[in-house]
Image 1 (cartoon, rainbow, N blue to C red):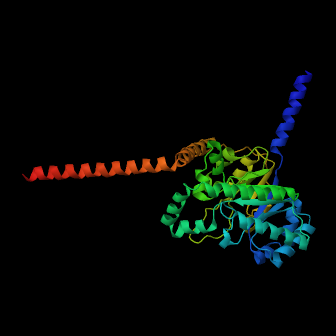
Image 2 (cartoon, rainbow, N blue to C red):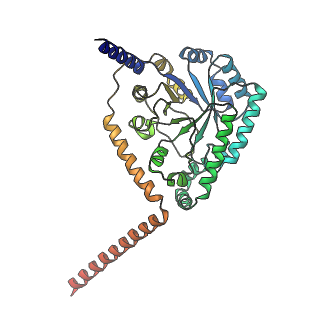
Image 3 (cartoon, helix red, strand yellow):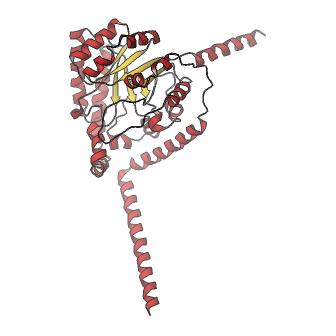
Length: 361
């Protein structure tokens, strides 16, 4: 009887823990003046305080407006994480070939923080592709494809990039910062198959940090991505509610409130911290009051079919990554297929010509 009572007690605790409200955080990606304007609203700061929310702030600049606004958030007791970014012409995000620029940016960040007595809950690094590659994908896709193909044969850049960024992360930790990274989930497919082809193609590095936050943006990847790509007991990033960096010719798909409410329930099964991209769009959409009063005791939507679909897509991606990890063999295979296709077309045309010639006789 005693054992049964203990089991019932533990089950009740587990159920309560599962349905408990997660800690909510928001990404903010605005330039200085817009950033200052967003937090000029005292009601927004009050709401964030009531939610016990934290912020991941994209440091696009070290402007006066940004400095004063972060000081205001510090005084309000709102935890702020520094999301380190570079100028757009230096790649914007952190990627394989801009490690030296990232090191200099971090030094500038420390100096700026010290001079203005800014308090940070932690540091975040965004491991993505080169911003200039993103632009090239829109304007010159063939040129980018050739550039990416040549990278498959470059084994030096990835080694140097990893060393540079691992050294930077080690320095951040030595400086007593809590370090986290924002990870494009397909990197986990690469890690699972022990390949490097994705990193070479895209420039996105797989450099591990104490906290890894998968960007499970179902507006781009599908609703099954949260289940497939979450890290147990680590934060999950959801999106996109709107906003973000502007890439000419690219219009990302934004989620609806129904999408976000579904994702909140699904993600709450796996984590006690959910990060939403992004705050400015969430406020503009009028969703902040809904998030504040959201009921996490609702039944979790059945996304099992979407999870299977995501797993199938992941297996396909993994297969391609393994093939591309052997670029010479992959190239030979493509050439053989092309030659075979040309030969079959030749045989077909020859047969047609013979048939037509026979009919004329």
